[in-house]
Length: 363
Ligand code: SAH
Image (cartoon, rainbow, N blue to C red; front, side, top):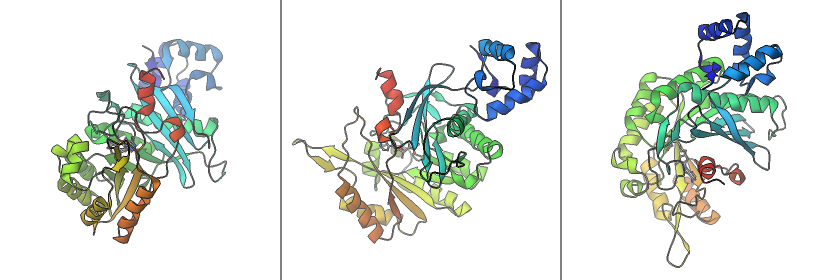
């Protein structure tokens, strides 16, 4: 296995360079490149070619290597399939938006949560990612912004830094809380990304929310709710058998009150095919909208409605645009802040875990 230079401490990197018979100031130069996300040694123009060749034989820059890169037709979304040292694969997505550049990172290889609508969990959990492996996803995106193609929607050529992070890729971040915290600390320190520009999304691991509370940084919290009552939620999200909606929302309230932040509620809109092949609404009838409104009334929250991204292996269907708007209208009428999440990169398989799954299937 090649030595991953990014994962060495400064003194270990110096020692590595000295052992190659090189002056130690090279370590500092290399570290600068690593923090800019250099994908390999060939880009390190201030390092002499013989040393670059030597490094190439024994080492790699980051703990992730790009296996596949897909760009949406509008050039605003780039999706990466990344390989890890043990051949596991993860996904990360760069979204260029009018408010900045947002990166969606994975926190685990695979996922153990078993949500019935999601592709990420189909192959189970392989392992937690290290803080380095999560951080490296940001660096891949940063390099792409500086050196790749893509188009910023406001056409600003200087808009080429990662400004926002969402931990909403594959995996359940609060099953890997300490590494996710380590990652956020570094993103804040080394890339100057403000706490308020970081969002962690959870299916509702209550002890993990309390870990975030004791950590104490004012990041944003998103709860994947997806149903307005425990009965329905337990059908599609096994974690609900362990932590009920009321416990999750109480913990989330404590978190958001502490920092005076708005809680984000994610709600996928799911339909199901009936015997006649028609799509029936599953969790998004007008009655569901009314009970969701009751559940959330009085909370400082924003509901993000997410039309379901179809996954072949999953037994759901996407509801019509009309149904989506009717659901939203009821929430708004009841005074609940609600928006419909803009779909990004559906042409490049942006649903959770789709790219990794397709790769395993040889697509
Ligand atoms: N485990 C965390 C973060 C990863 S999932 C969580 O549950 O929040 C990120 C979001 O994408 C979650 O809200 C998840 O429910 C949603 N999601 C998963 N599969 C989806 C699909 N096929 N279409 C739309 N959203 C999906």
